[in-house]
Length: 128
Length: 295
Image (cartoon, rainbow over all chains, first blue to last red; front, side, top):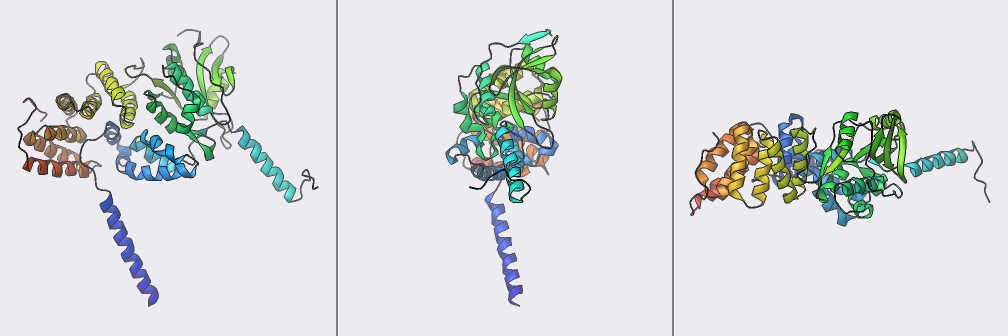
């Protein structure tokens, strides 16, 4: 009984928030940017035009999480097209990040050695 | 194509930890005439917790320096053609293996076919010689991604219109109106029948407040590509701004019919609502010279 009522209010709340989400993102009138016009001519990217605006918020959040100075984030987002933002929102954690990961590899080796040490397989980190 | 070629004047910035992105980007930007150092680029491209920089952000940062980022077709021929035209090439390599990738940016500055080598600016090495096949494999493992930076108005000899216009549209989106305008003019001179070049020219003129030029350019775009709803929308917007509501209305009706079921449908509808409202209270007559607007 109580649970059913709870479910019903959840559904109601969700519906309201979905509707208001829809209302918050009306298509803006005015000029279509060339990048969006090009994306629309490439069928598979048609949706990117719509997703661009939502992706911007996603990427903003992810960039801060990945350690970008918040003061720099807007400038970085502003340099990208809607299509690029949509793609980035989906793969910012997996896309190739060129940076010569030599030290990261050394770190991995250290972790492996540490695990082996802790499990007693090896004994290279002497205790005092 | 020469047997041996090396762009010896290409500057060199030894990379600091993980900073091959800013270093490689500064190298090609300098070569295209921008006085910039890696330190200034790092805050624009580096992702601290990924210990590296993403391709998309190298592209974005190029735009912020007033340069078009032109992504090359993934062929060895395309790399060599760029070198022949005097532009070093920034490229992504995978120096690890497929399962444990080690992503790295380097700049190709030359090759020697008789010795079978590629010459790179890479990491802390000002002049790194690598056997061509070994280099090509590392590039192949990274998806054959390569780019050059172009000063506005420069179009690579082998460029195709679609690729080039995508690069220009990027700098337009980044807000560099002047670079976009110069580049669209160059694109029109090279490909006069390319509708998207005219479309872009219209956007550059519109952003500059030049309604007559914008209306002309959108008209060209819509005439060359009668099915392009976005061109109708933009033409209608500039017509309405100039007080030409009757024609604006006609173009929007055409645009709405063309955009049915696409991403632009709701946007064109929104433009129509605004234009109708503005038309109700219009007091000044149409300020654009009468002409034959696209059907």
